[in-house]
Length: 195
Ligand code: FE2
Image (cartoon, rainbow, N blue to C red; front, side):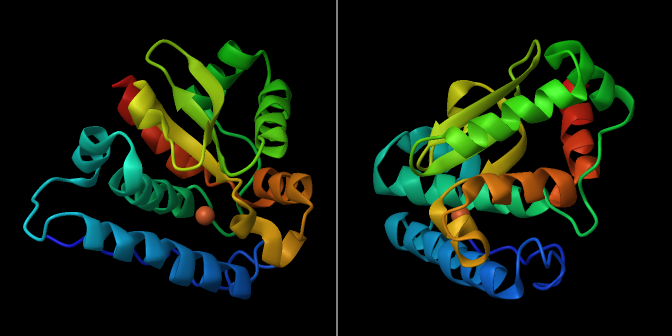
């Protein structure tokens, strides 16, 4: 069973001007596709393991890196939507207030984690089983290996923002939070994890 590149859940120009068509074409069509291709080269042809199992069995090395980057990017595309941003409502909004004090305190913490993460990686909102947390991971690492459930991620590898923002990672993070977050998707993951 070969792994395949999932289509973007929106047209490749739908997130402009915050992320341009060129940026998404490169990020999805080249970077993410390459992770999928290299994963398929690295795993046995007839594996029936799902992606989570491949990640958890590998734990490190090339198979882990390509599998985790496939997982992370597949998740990242769903965390964005045209006309996104704003605030979460309902139970997720209440949980954010409960665990961070306020929505503004949460966004400040997530912005800080994403903007200041050293080198390549990912900033996350996760459910650790008892509360919501902001975390960041290096390179391909992801909450799955830490026993946490991912609810939202921001790709802070340079390839995620260099086309549109050059070296201004904080501006990319601000645009992500203000205009791109798909809170409906985050809320769906949260209601599943709370069930
Ligand atoms: Fe990326």
